Structures are given as C-alpha cells and as structure tokens.
Length: 461
Image 1 (spheres, rainbow, N blue to C red):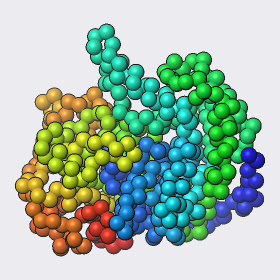
Image 2 (image 1 turned 30 degrees about the horizontal axis):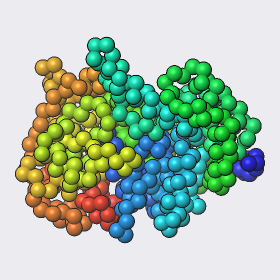
Image 3 (image 1 turned 180 degrees about the vertical axis):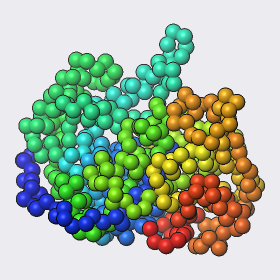
Image 4 (image 1 turned 45 degrees about the vertical axis):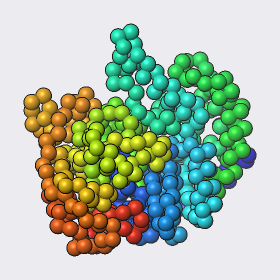
C-alpha cells in the first residue's frame, strides 16, 4: 500500500466569484424509512450531474427495479444506474469498506458501470469492532434486570447491528476514528487502529468479541488488502461538488433512512445516528443549503416501521398483514418484516415542515387497492388532550392514540396508470386529502415497483 498521490491538491479551487446553481434537488423520506426513495432517485437521476449520499451507512437500503430486475443498494447512491451521473458518497456517510466492495463487485457482475462512483476521502469507516459493539449493546439492552425489565427502560433500540451508531460515536470521539483517506496513509492507519483496539480492550466491556477481532495488525493487513480497490474512487468530494455547482451543474442529494429516524428530530431514542433530513445535507455533503431549489418528500401511501419504537397507527390485524404481504414489506438490508399501519399524516406534516418540502411523492399507492375503506390519522389523543402536533420523543409518542378520518377505498388495479386521470375517483380523493392536509403539492405517484410504473405531476423535477 502506498501513499495517495493526492493529485486533486494540484487542481485549482473553484472560482467563488461565479454564481452557485440553485437547481439542486433533495430527496428525503418523511416517515420511518423504506418509503421508496431509491425508485424516485433512479427515475430522475439522469437529469442531474451527480447523486450525492450525505448520511447513514450500510444500515440503509434502497431498491431499484427496471427491466424486470431488482437491484438492492446499501451504500452506493441510486444514481449509479445513470451513465451520465456521478454517484458520490459524501463525508457524512459512515462506510463499511468490505460491504462497499462487495456491493460494487455485485453491481459490476450485473453489468452496471461503477466507474462513476466517487467516495469522499473524509468519510469515516465502520470497522468490525463497531458491529460487535452494536450487537452487544442491543443484547445488553434486552437483558432483564432484577425487576424483570430490560436493561434500559425502553429495551433494545432495534438497530440493524451494522455498527453505524458506534462508528458515529467513534467519529465524535476523534482519536481512534479511521477515515477512508487513511487507507492510503499506512502510518496513520496503523496508529489509529492501534489506539482503537487498545481503547476497546481496556475500557469497553460491551464488546463481546474474540481477541483476534481487536488485533490491530490483523485489521491493518485486511484493510491494506482492499485499499487498492477503493483508491480509484477516492477524492475530495467537497471541492468536487463545489466545482460542479459553480459550473452550473445541478446535483441530487439522496437521503438515507428517513426524517422520523433523525438523531435530533426523530422519535428518540428509537432513531439512527445521523442527520437524515435535508438539514443534514450541508454538513454531510459540504455544500450550502442555498443550492437547493426543490426538496421532494417521499411518503408511502400507508405507514411502516422496522425495529422498535412507537408507531401510533400500527395495525396488528389482518389489514396490517395484508398491507405487509401486498407491499412486500421486508427490509432491503435485513429482511426483517416491517410493521404496517394506516397513513399517519400528523407525522408526515411534521416531517414536511422540517425538510421544507416543495413537493411530495406518494409511493406504493397500488398496495391499497382492494380495501373497502382507507383511514388516515389526522390528530392524536395524548392523555385526554387532542393535538395535531407530532411529539418527537418516544416517551410521549407511545401514549398517542390516533384519531382517524375515513375515506372510501378503491378496488381497481392501478398499476397500468400513467396519469392522474387514469386513477379511480377514490384514489384521486385519497391523494387530494393528503395534499390538502400536508399543504404541499404532490409531484410524483408510484403505482408499482418498476421504474416505468410512475406518474409525474406538474413538470420535471
């Protein structure tokens, strides 16, 4: 392994006297994730010069379906399928390097050109010991205490055990954190691994792992072996994106996870460890918020959640099971069955407010076909108080009882629709109600898994 040539240091900085484009688009989830962001991004990415992932790690999964094939993505941005578009992983992402290489090799084997992938040399690495710590913490939280309660009053968080939380914690602690650029600086890499393994051996009793997993020399050798595979993709993506913005090239920012899992604004503590909203773009990608011209909020036509945490509209009955089956509601990353329920518009409106959405994309509307009636949550009752405000704290939200409006269902198969006029009246009424309650226009409707099973409303995004 050799030092990175740092060729980009010889490139001139962007000319800051040139105006920055404001034609960029953010695509963010407005629920608990799995809304279908990947499909929307894949559909519109050819209109943008780069698709930029700015948060999360391999705990997030996007599915893209076209030509009868389903492609599962975890770290690679969904724009990878567009030949003209760069797929950029920004510095705010925590990258499992082994998982990333596996993903790139799988895509290449499927005939996808992965040469357009650019990986920030500032992105932090998820190490094997982070995964072990993640799993150990979850197991400890689930252990009953002397009173029969779990180790923490809320029990396990319900993480994917992919090591994301511990990796972000290591990033904040700084001294032992490893970044992608360190793969090409052997002396730095070896020292940081030594410090990390020493810290964990001495002070972290949460890690239940065999000694070899904290062997700094062994980890160094493993990372040294894969470094040449990632080197062609490494760059200073912050300067790259600023140069593109000054050249008038529009960017698309791809959110991972979703708003209600945001570490600051979600249903804490049942959240992920990064800024999942459009508010996280500036720090996670290194670009100013004023470059955003549009923010598209992605919403399922119903609600789902994976893992633990309160979900006021959850259906633990035949209707919930029907939605799960018809929507194939199983995690892209973990395969876990998702909890399903009626659409919670209180939560969606809160998320839309946070993100400053300029448009909505309603996904999986076809899954609701055949139901006699459709319910939507328009308010909560919390301790006898009716409210239309969303409480972003699990200890408050767990007491929320949904108050519903009931709308007529529709029986027709809508998967062949290509315009709003093709939809049955009841489906149009459902969309109109969502639009009116949230106060944001619907710009996109998905009526099937394939790329072409989509309705765009109101012009190109």
